[in-house]
Image (cartoon, rainbow, N blue to C red; front, side, top):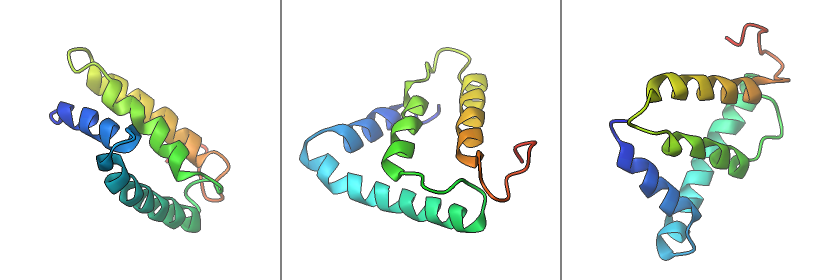
Length: 97
């Protein structure tokens, strides 16, 4: 939340049809693809995740109200996201760790 304006910038950079999106979307997706592939290879996330889908679902981070209980909400939402990414992973433990 200390970088609250970053969410708006990331959203504009990855969803608009302008030149900024064209320049930034590819590198963001490439980095996310590498992270997903490394975790899939390590067995810590399920296979077949699409980087576009993961980026889209991460959009909740820049929509959290910075004036509210953002820390607790971000923690809960990240737990749900991570549980979903780990569901069906070969080495995922039942306790989510």
